Image (cartoon, rainbow, N blue to C red; front, side, top):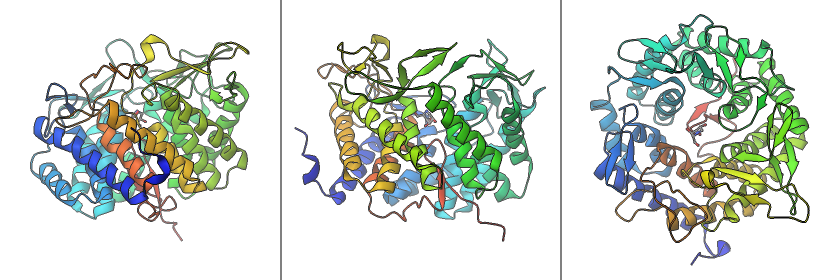
Amino acid sequence: MHSSATSVSSEDRLEAVREAFRHAWKGYKEFAWGHDELKPVTKSYGEWFGLGLTLIDALDTMWILGLKEEFEEARAWVKEELSFSKNVDVNLFESTIRILGGLLSTYHLTGDEMFLDKAKDIGSRLMPAFKTPSKIPFSDVNIGKGTARPPRWTTDSTVAEVTSIQLEFRELSRLTNDPQYQAAVDEVMSQVHKLEGKHDGLVPMFINTNSGKFTHRGIFTLGARADSYYEYLLKQWLQGGKTETALLEDYVQAIEGVRKNLLKKTQPSLLTFVGELSHGRLNPKMDHLVCFLPGTLALGAHNGLPPEHMELAKELMETCHQMYAQMETGLSPEIAHFNLQPRNGRDVDVKPADRHNLLRPETVESLFYMYRYTHDSKYRDWGWEILQSFNKYTRVPTGGYTSISNVRDPVSPGPRDKMESFFLGETLKYLFLLFSDNEELVSLDRYVFNTEAHPLPIWPSAS
Ligand code: DMJ
């Protein structure tokens, strides 16, 4: 039975998030300590980069939740065991947002220089990725050998990946007084700013590392492979103290592009969604990943962008909520298809291949921003319902939470035996911040969250 939303106090909700974290951590500690990801069902672990990804992603979450003992144990592992001197290929984007971002934010929250030293180490080891003919980085770097390469099948990189590493490398330059990091990522932004092939500020999904041009043109989405390009336009502008106007202009133009080309309403309930444009045709589908957008729009509106951005944020937030509420498990599918036919069908449909849920954060992330800026308690209630659904359908009794295969089947949701690092890095952190009355815990006027929920400081003005 779900406890009714209004009967639970903020303190009880905060404690429920801490309890969920401890339960997830118990599984990680017992079966996956020092490894990348917990496989909670088989009580084992999975390796991606072999760098303790979950542990690093979770550091600042433990700090924010006030889990001191767990934090100290993890800190000791980072200090004694974590080594980046390893012959291993890592994905530039994933290791920047999770590892570099996680270490930098933990350094800022704690003031502990050890985290900064580790951040410098990984940051400098990722730099070979930028040695390409176009200076648009390769997707993969070997952090031991100092070599970089594209994936085996193409010389393209993903647009979201090369444009969502800026907050972290810019901050690394500021902290080290070494301009090379910022120079490398600013160069990518200035090239993308000028590139042909955009459509009303919307970008294609791929960019070639030899030519520096967009490839696979004509397809526009706010979902996978493009999503955080838009997020980082706004957030870099905020990080730099609202001085870099090209970033702001590109962001505002892109949101106009979304309005003009991608927005539609469902039938029969008239939910607003962001579809995908493929060579002029609108495909009425939306990745759960797009649910970062209400939060980003709200952040922009709070910082002086048009009030219509906030109106759109509210409408999209409702849609993301419905993507959970209309499913039998109360959990969203990875991709929703929307109905445009009047007098026919339900608003949200799910294709068999898209029925999984990977414990992703985007909806609770946006709920956090929406609550901070409106104080409308419905956003907290929606987040509370999501936490309860995670507990009901994804919690593994022996420790940990698991991705599931079918959000439409509450009897057999199909545990997939994987707890992604972002469940601890993002999902539980945003739920905690959503329920917390202490808005100074991480102030949105002093910090900007990277795309893996690691808060980085907004730069103090030079004057
Ligand atoms: C995370 O690594 C980040 O939030 C990224 O921006 C998108 N994918 C996952 C979470 O869904």
